[in-house]
Image (tube, rainbow, N blue to C red):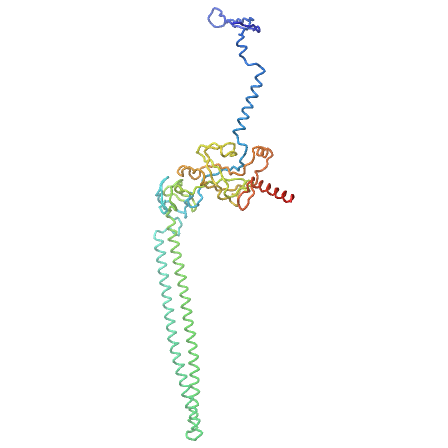
Length: 455
């Protein structure tokens, strides 16, 4: 095979020598020589020409660009990103803290960490440390006080009722006396007029007329006195009834107060029995054993409800983003612990893997105090179901992307460079007005205008 000489190449060779003592301290000899470099004509012919390398590189870049343009969507889904936790849409199925209702000393725990409880099950018992309620038989004592108070009040009412009956009896006698006095007046008046006629006829003496006159005057006076006594007895009956009513009201008030105190004592004693308000699992029991004292309002444990279908996700967004979010908007969610691939911050939701669909159910009308607004997201019934509730527990971290309008990729790049906000949706009756529909309306309006101009 023919060969062709193209150039001379310098080659250096190092040779190490020893000094004869075996200690490795010898000399190094460097031999430099020039040798010809040959290669075959076939190898030279098979090598890539230098002028073809730029063309090949440019062609490769062009092909890759075409592939990227072909496979990358030319639209961008504007979205608002937020993060939060998994919760329940119904407050009754959210984790609830069990707090001490009184200042007391723990007597006994009836549950352990992770215990499954039913609503009404006893979790722990406390003994009240208030000096007013320390006595074991304080409830019985208060009940005895209430009973004694009720008996005394009833006795006073009975005495007042007897006084009313006595006054009514006196009133009855006074009425009879008045009636008899009126009869005596009529008799005396008749005798007086008879004596007057007989005295005119000379049949009776003047003395008899004077006697009849005195009897009439006396009967009239007795009648007036009886009428006055009747008014006194009527007023006495009224006073007795008023006194009875007052004592009844007083007795009712005293008994009600005693019942209230007894109820408060019983309720206070029952507050020492800590019970579960819901069905669920006990978590985070306080680091307090029997004999330790807890204060009113101190958390004893947390009851996590059983897996509920009313699951939701609460994510928080800024005040600028909250202004363009309304209910019903689609959301893509990524739950912590569940593998997912989100392409470029949710701009292409169709290319994302492992995310779950949802819809905006509630947007809080006020912020949380730090400029963040809470958005509650519920599962989308038209999308794949969320993970099993046994694994997707309340409190799991979640990242959400609230989807807005679709825009061109070039417009989104220009918006990001300029720092402009997303397109604000145009709401018509609570629904977004599609951009295409708006364009069609504009076009139809223009065509109608042009038609009218032509006419």
